[in-house]
Amino acid sequence: MSTDRISLRARLLLTVLLPVLLLSAAMTGLSLFRGARMADREIAERGLAIVSFLAPAAEYGVISGSRGSLDGLIQALQAQNDVAAAVLYDLSGHELARLGAPVLADDGRTRQAKEAVRLGRQGRRVAFAAPVMSMPVAVDEFAGGRAALAPFPVGWVYVEIDTRAYDARWRTTVMTTVGLAVGALVLAMLLAIRLANVVGEPVARLVEAVRRMARGELDVQVSGRAGSEELQTLEDGFNSMARAIANAHKTLQARIEQATARLSHQALHDPLTSLPNRRAFEQALEELLSASRRAGDHGALCFMDLDHFKPVNDTGGHAAGDALLRVVADLIRSHLRSEDTVCRIGGDEFALILRGCTPADVARIASGLCAAVRDLRFEWEGREYRIGASIGFAMIDGALGSVAELVRAADHACYMVKREGRGRAMAYRPEDFGAPPPGS
Image (cartoon, rainbow, N blue to C red; front, side, top):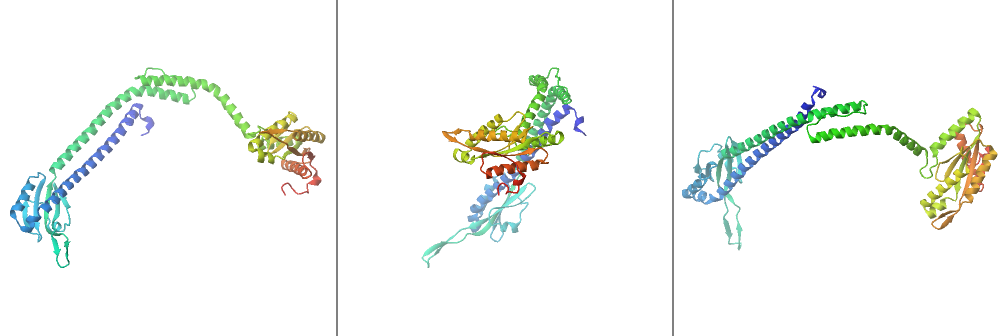
């Protein structure tokens, strides 16, 4: 049967009663199991205690054969209500004294007992046996000392315990436990029915309202009076929540768009300088190259590498290096036009994409940047640092047909600048491309 067809009232009853039923059954079973074990352990302890006490007490009577002593032991056992039968044996297994009619008596098993043991159970009788030990002390006169001989059995005691009193107590425990479990179950059933009646209708209204909201209805309100103050508070809270959701939905899309824009900005910008990163650089370069193929727009790609930047990190620390990179980023932005793009593509490496420029314009802008960086005075913790910039550029005019070729050309031009003295700008020259590549 599908759970969708079960009424809310029935579900509430099952929700309350099933755990109570399972818990009651588990606790009752555990209680009965532990009660049975405790009763069995109590019988065993009682029987072992009796034979352990009886065996030493019977030593004299067994050795001497004194009927008076043995009869006194039997009378003492008669005073024990739970002792149903008892037998005293001598070393040969002959019966010396008896109480009652033993049911489980087995001379062979009794005589095998080396200590107080439980022999078995039959019906309401549990049998126990223990050896009667003699512990004489022998004197070794020739050796000038004395030595204790090992104890040896001189007979056995056999006792049967009647378990009716223990069984009666256990049955009382069983009835009490079952009665408590049934009472708890009945009480839980009454409470479950009450809960189902009180909660069912208000919860059903709330469920229907939630389903309507799931279908996209944002103006849902729950009407009616609940059966309790708590449920009424829940309905009022739901109505307030529904109104809040409806109001929040009006601004949610705008916030999502803002978050999307922020994530998009973070994905395409360097967190240190806020400049576009390498990914944005590659996209912008691809766009400019495509525009150059379509409309003949010309531009240039410049690679700018800072000179003497490593000593700033080494002496001032990375905090100084980061601060200097932010200063340089602002400096580059101030020297470029609004249509140009500057990106940070590495540690101290920047890429400039200049649009609508002739080679002379590119050389002028790049040289101005080199001079501005050279004139920069950067102070950190009372110390002044001087750096420089080397710029290599390649024109985007159709001569180089791919992004990879443009990047390789501008990078090689920057390498040639560093190789020939640093601190200035240089255009890519195809005849220099045979020189060793950067890093060789």
